[in-house]
Image (cartoon, rainbow, N blue to C red; front, side):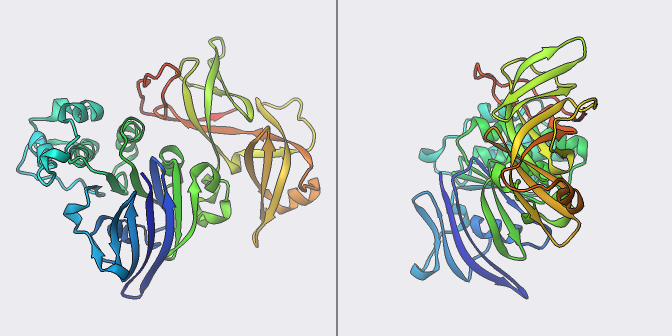
Length: 380
C-alpha cells in the first residue's frame, strides 16, 4: 500500500510543511525531538486536522482540505501504538485484545486473534492484567490490540522510547515479524539511527518541520549530512548479507553480499540465513594501498565515488565496492593527504561490523530463525 502525504499545519509557533510518498513495509519518520514527527503521525492518524493539504492511503483519500474531506479517525482503519501502551488497566490482556475489534465491522475483519497471539508470543499473558506486565510485554499487547482491529495501516510513535535496552531487545524481534509476516504497512516514529537501520525499509527525514529527504533506508543512511550532528557517527552502510560459511575453530562466520565477504565473530546463525548488517561510517578506514600486517580482517576493494567536506574537520567518503556503496567518515586532513578524489581506487578497511543477533530475517527455506536478544559489535 502506498501512503501519500502533502500537508501544512501550524501549532503555536511551530510550523510543519512536508510532502512524501512511500510504499515501504516499514517507513520510519526520523528526526530529532521537535522536528515534527509526532505531529505528522497524528495528522495521518486523524488526531489532528491539517490547516491545508492532502493525505491518501492507496486509493482512499483520508484528508483533502481543498475538497472538504476529513475522514474521522475511527473510520480510517488505522492502528496506533503510542510510547506508553495505554492498555485498559481493569481488563485482562485477552479483553484488551478483543477491544481492538470493537470498531471494525465484522465483514472487514481479517485479524485472527489466535494468529496475532502466536505472532507476538503473548499466549501466556492472556489472563493477566496490565499492572502485572513488564514494559515490553505491555507494548506487545498494545501492538496486538492494534493488529486485531484489522487495520490498513499501523502507526507507531516511538514505541521503544520508554523501555530500557533489555526490553527494547525483547520487543524488536516482534516488530520485525510484524513487518515481515503481515501485509500491513507500518509508519514508525523514531529518533534512533540504530532502530531505523534495523527496522525500516524506507525513511522520511524531518528537520525543523520540513521533510529533508525520503527514500529507501539504505540510501538515506549514506547521506550523513541529513542526520542530526549527534547521530552522524551512527550513519553509514546498511546491507543485507547472507551467511555463507562458519569457522568453528575461531568462532567466526563469513557473510557475503555484492560488496564482498566479511567475517564476524559471535554470530549464531546457519549458512543461508540473511542478516541486516550496519557498517558505521566511523568504523571504516580508507587506504590507497591494500594494508598488510594489520588485525582487521575485512578489507573491501573499491573506487571513490565522492568526497564531501563540511564546515567541520570531517569528510565523508563514498566508495563503490562492487556495486555496493560504503561510506567512511575521516578527517579532512586525511582525505587531503591521501589525495582522495572520484575515480581513485582504494580499499575500505572495516574496523567494526554492527549487527543484532535478533535481527535475523527469513532463511532461504522461508522459515524464520529463532531470535535472540543481544547486540554485538564485532571488532576485527
